[in-house]
Image (cartoon, rainbow, N blue to C red):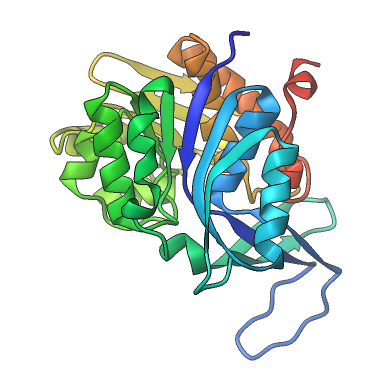
Amino acid sequence: MEKSKIMVVGSLNMDLTATTHILPNEGETVFGDKLTSAPGGKGLNQACQLGLLGAEIKMIGAIGNDVNGKSLLSALKDANVNTSGVITKNNTSTGSAVILLEVDDAGNGANRIIVIPGANKAFTYDDINFIESEIKQYDIVMLQLEIDMDVNEKVASLAHKNGIKVMLNPAPYVPLSEKLLRNIDFLSPNEHELYAMTNIDVHDDKGQIDVSRIEAAYDMLAKKGLNSLLITLGDKGSYYIDKLNSIYVPAIPTIAVDTTAAGDSFVSSFCFALANKYSIEAAMHFATRVASYTVSHLGASSSLPRLEEIEK
């Protein structure tokens, strides 16, 4: 494969995961199975996945001047990510996330996540405006919503102005401006985020995917300037739609041990394939394989596969 060049502008978190057989109700205390910490954050997860697949990656983001920040830098470097764009903010802590992971006897996992932004929301576009002189060398810029919206809007505008493709993973969801949507080439929400954006449920009364509802959601967003929509549908697969194409790719049947980084794994591997001249459909199939591997392993960045593991 030709080496693709991708810039990720986004969040870096230290994830603290409590694994349990049952999540507590209000006012209830339960016993857990184990407590682990690992690098995470949507930006870091996406950058690490791209680095492990073999892309040339530059991470743009912020950490605090603390132990967690140093650990995140090490994790990025171990995944072959260029960290020269990661700045240190001395007046706040590194971002973190608390993950409650419920795993049943069959090994199936479901999670609930609380994110504490820290340095992720403390940096501004002025802190990273050095990207203006180098953005032209990249094939794709990837964004998410765990950083300040003004940063996302200005980076997307800069990339669009320079003819660079922009992927936005709108999670955790907050309302998106039409200005931002007009500068996005690929918007990749899950079904819940798409519902928050459009108030359209993509499932019919029997819980099956309804293509006409997906088309209605896309039409609504296209009127606001969006180019294309790539919806992740969990164990039902993914669906891509733009003005000319509609493509559905089913999921690979997998025992989902931990879905924490599934969306990050999918969207970054899709961008990796796209930057390597795959068709949209081929990129979706590749991303499906990568995401399937990810959900079958525990952890966020620790569950992300290398290219050779996918090729096997």
